[in-house]
Length: 115
Length: 116
Image 1 (cartoon, rainbow over the protein chains, first blue to last red):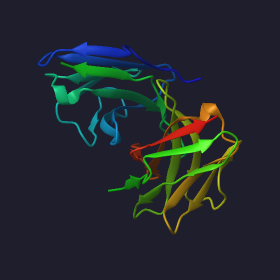
Image 2: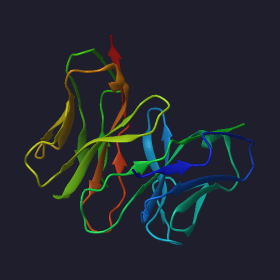
Image 3: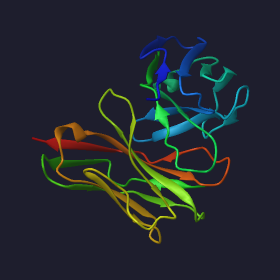
């Protein structure tokens, strides 16, 4: 079974702090994603990466950056945390290859509170 | 850009009954994939069922089945013999079949309550 592990289940940070959310997958997946989940808004894509050191902006990248130095690890960085970044953050991964029906595999999520 | 709409934010069903969750999407593409994901309370998001747009046959997975209407751009999920463990948030999602298109577009989700 694919395992996607997010380093923290709950995190509380102060406004202005730099925050790192870590995600590791063990299935050698090329693609990794960071989503933000808010009630009534569903899941919104922040950034994704299809290879080491490659990244692409999703729908809501403002205030975030990412790092992918190793294939198995994809980090989300909040450069200066703000209260409107209080949310549930979900990491996901999937394999590449021919265009077939490949589902996302999700981590357990990190609930971040910025005070 | 593609969009996915789940018009019902909440539904409830009695245990052992059948419930249908609705999803519509908007796309100009002819080839794509559709998914239903389930997120139980405080637990991991998992795949329930998936459908390739080029397949006319509706996907089924045990008690879960879909009604895929390509012309109407509708992708509803039917849960038969509902169980307490089916209580969760359900998300409908779309992905293009174009090479290099890896992003999933999600609906806003629907909370399903199962009453004993």
